[in-house]
Image 1 (tube, rainbow, N blue to C red):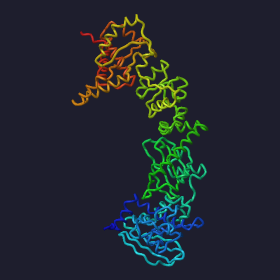
Image 2 (cartoon, one colour):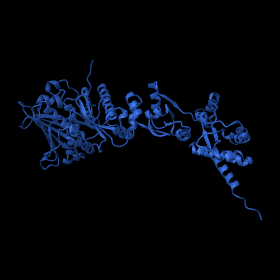
Image 3 (cartoon, rainbow, N blue to C red):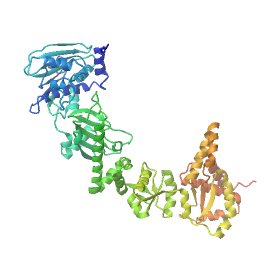
Image 4 (tube, rainbow, N blue to C red):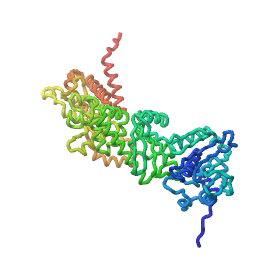
Length: 585
């Protein structure tokens, strides 16, 4: 035995009118959609007019009325479209299922219960008698003969308590202009026209810029025309004139068949294109049931990729025709372009040629750096770059700061796709291979000093070596290899772990590299030679500890508690030796 569902009509009305839509504002959109559909049904030669009379107009008796000179409905069509929820098999027969139509007449009308307790639809189709349908928010409706009238439809809303403000002239004018300004029919509110019928991306350049400033709140850096025939989409991407957080996903203004869907649609552009805000109109993209978002299907994915291609094309045209302007754009929105370049070869080449990266020789592009130094040698972090930039420059070693977002990944990817490009990350200890060894006689003389210095720094896990390098003004350099840095992090983790994890880390410690950081003393520096020649072992020890602390600070290395204590004791020790003691009397 089969059964049919028992449906609570009052609950369905409440669900559709109060939970499907995010805001009561959409009722104006739904009324306009129904009116435009009725006009569209008469064909393109029909001159359509939609007239809205707000609740606070003198002749409105506190209700809101919307009139259209569209096709109107017969009594049978009223029952089919307004009294049946969820069944649309007869829409073709009734003339309301054609591709050109905007919405679902019956369901859309229910949105009016967001602001009204009663809805009256007074309608007449040419050659038929007028009909009056009255719907109530509790789920009841009545159908009867209507007063004589011209063909078309009038929808009257009786406001519900607490929602009166949504039916006033100021509010309705603002909403009608927001949702329907681009409609190809004439729409008036209290006698004032709110439609322009002109697509903003078809305006002259200055007018498009003014439109963006007025509607989107900024004067764009540039305007990129968009055209995706498969989606019936035309429009424009307005490039933001200031940097924007890549994590922010600004929405786009999307129209469907010239009716505004939403001012904040997401998913229209790829994630890397956060530098643009779009205004588009489409005939093929599908809205969700509430008509407040786009349905995420294959058509939307194809549209997103097509728009991405057009944004790429704009960037490539700029690189070919106006490099200066491309440079201005990159200085503002380099993060978006670099994010795209991580998986797009064309954009990677554009970044290589035009985007200046920070190096120890100034800001230069990767192409210029390659021409000058051959190898794309980079520091993986900003701290590492600060530690090594000056010393590397003194050795005539070019170094790129790969610590900014995506920079190191872009350098690695460039080398991966182009066999002629060499890239390598500079290990801090690689610099010591470019330093000059001290001659045997000088090293022999310094051996006692170096042994004493090593004893002072052994407890800090630091190895003391002497080399000759530039700049001469730098007395000491603290270098930490990647293996030593890993070992320090590993040791810190072991110290903070509980017994269980401590045992696991102890077992792993046998495989951890045992490289130690190095304090490299510069034999070319006069101060180092004077300290090495001191006959006072205690004073020489204090000097080495101070040099160690200064090297940490100059290299922007993290200061551990033991390092901070050493800085304090060595400074006070030197100060004590420098200040004459008071003679006892």
